[in-house]
Length: 361
Image 1 (tube, rainbow, N blue to C red):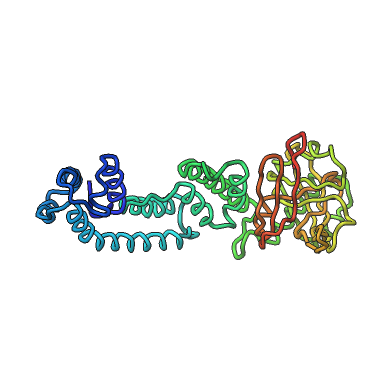
Image 2 (image 1 turned 45 degrees about the vertical axis):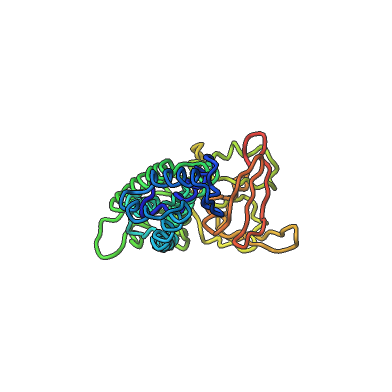
């Protein structure tokens, strides 16, 4: 049935119907056959509202009826197209604000999608999924976005499933932030400055490190740590013992790792050795951090590239590139068949790694 918003689709359906009944020639190019004209007029009248029948019913030929319907709906069609263009422009501009919740942002996307459907044009679900992930704040959601891009086919994934996974991730992040806030309050009980800048807190951290990891050592070493930046990493998704089957020159491309890490001091192009601390892995092992810096790579094309923010951990027997950290820097990670590829911001291929027998890259 013809409505105010579906003329284009209606015309396509009616053409198909008239062709099935072998009477499309009464419309294009036009025919004087009385029997065919009567059948065509009857089919047209069955597919338009009564008010429109009263307006076009006096036309003597089927072609005249068709042209009258077309003339009355072209204006409405232009309005529909204009509204659709406005909606699509609004859709393209959508971005989630830092103050928005996932539900807020999903509501805005769904509203535009519904309005578009009412105007006769469905937005493909894969396009909605892509827009949703692209519009999330990168700093907050980069790790989960990278994970979803690797484990799911976003062309077939449902919008509802993607939203559910993001909301689960968001809830976990809030839980961790609440936990960190509680810990900060416990470690800084004086007013007048931020917990992260509290001298007493830093001293307690150093003393805690001395008690847990350096029992029996000279206290002068703990005092010397006051000159360093102290970091504590929890790499619970990394188990170094599982990464020791390859050469010590190989690098693992790891989605579970939060940071780039290596135990090879000689590879560093620049190294800030004032950064010290501890890292705890998923197998409950704990090792020292002895610096952080950049490592220089040479591509096959002879171009020099820097891998920044790599932790120097002498006791680490493996070399790890964090895929999450790489995507946070703008790299594009893709998994296809038995290969993983890593491209830079300009689309240049940086890495192509084959999947090993233990399903690592």
